[in-house]
Amino acid sequence: MNGQRFADRVQAGQALGAALAGYAGRRDVVVLGLPRGGVPVAAEVARALGAPLDVLLVRKLGTPGRPELAMGAIAEDGVALVNEDIVRDLGLGRDAVDRAIAEAAPELDRRLGTYRGGRSGVDVAGRTAIVVDDGLATGASMEAACRALAARGVARLVVAVPVAAQEARERLRAVADEVVALATPSPFWAVGVWYADFSQTTDEEVVATLAAAARSAR
Image (cartoon, rainbow, N blue to C red):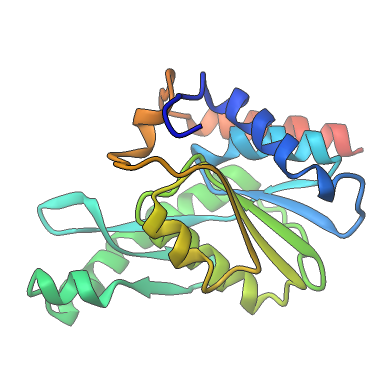
């Protein structure tokens, strides 16, 4: 699908779930979505596989004056990943990196409280974790997520996305056991280009999706 677009995140998740059918019905599998846009995709994957759904909180570290350019990411477990090449190329000092981490941490904590409401996350130790986002541009956030999960002792780590830049897919192969990307278009441009509807996912939608998954699990 290198020239087509997905209709929306739901349709992309359904297609991704079909591609991951080999994991369906396995009791060791858990699906984790990266908020916010990865959650509706992950919900469809979890539904297709009959697996529990949870979130993994990751926050991009934008560069000063260019917030859309990720110089790294932090994950909920305290894992911080910094792209040293970008930091060096932009002439940024350690103080700029520390400031970006300090600025990102409160929003990470806020989302953690909003999405989980005080409950603990799904235990992934010894399990197969399928980590889902709506796409990979640089792969920084996903790499931080993978490193956080590795520290939690997952048995197998699978990265699954509808669309990815080729460079990001190769980057994730160094930290995941398997990387599934339905499309790796070139030129890539941006994740949103490959969706007809790429409207922003809200906190309320994430909470509602997680609540519906929890009800279904019960």
